Amino acid sequence: MSRAFVFPGQGSQAVGMGTDLSQAFAAAREVFQEVDESLKQNLSKLMREGPESDLVLTENAQPALMAVSMAVVAVLEKEGGRPLASLASHVAGHSLGEYSALAAAGALKIADAARLLKLRGQSMQKAVPVGEGAMAALLGIELEPAQEACKEAAQGEVVAVANDNGGGQVVVSGHKAAVERAIEAAKARGCKRGMLLPVSAPFHCRLMQPAADAMARALETVPLATPRVPLIANVLAAEITEPGAIKQRLVEQVTGLVRWRESVQYMKSQGVETLAECGAGKVLSGLVRRIDKDMNGLALNTPADIEAFLKTA
Image 1 (tube, rainbow, N blue to C red):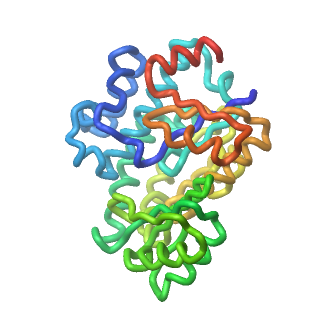
Image 2 (tube, rainbow, N blue to C red; image 1 turned 180 degrees about the horizontal axis):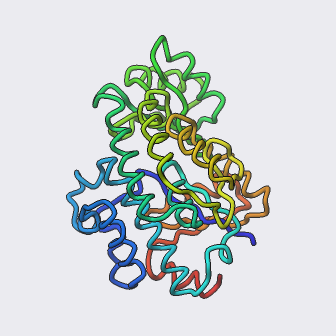
């Protein structure tokens, strides 16, 4: 098997997401209905119609992105008549996408994933008062110089690398002033551009510890099975299958570095040649060749994408 399924994180949401899947496939409609019922919220209507100001709220965006990813997987399995394990050798997800990956691999029920992500979003938002934290994308810089820039910029505050996305794209997170200082420190180390991101909280840094604690408590109450194919964990950049260890990594992930570049490189070392991105947007499939020019990225987010994929899978 030379293919892995990967699942997008926050930022890929958009009004209208999943609408074409819902119109084309009963399997997708069933997923959206299950998520709505689990949350006691008409999230699918918000996804279809907006307003965008509500959809981008972390507590809505996270379960919405998982819902679209799981709709794609449900269509692949039911329309194609192929279980996920026959289509992919590994799964991985960027940040919240790790929950989508676990649900796709049968380790987590869709309803449980939706409730966990709702709580995750709420807890992340509550962890830091609005305006105190920030995140910034640094372009044209690699992990180590970005980490050095963060050390220089901290000055008693928190700032750290949150995402190592690969292809010279690194995201930093922390106190707003420290993040702004890190942008300047990174430019002195060759960063071509640094820009603040339109996010509501500083994800994947130690300011998120209250959210990590909330997720640890929540995960204790949720059953987790062994995934049907190995998960490449964000904080390990290596595969993991034992349910207790997966829960621990999900907690660590809230404050930890998303090691996406290394995760992709690990999958290549295991024989993976193509990453198929299941869900909204094309962020991860777009990053693949920037990380490794010998690998391919494929986006599966429309009925046409899925039908074309099933003809060749």
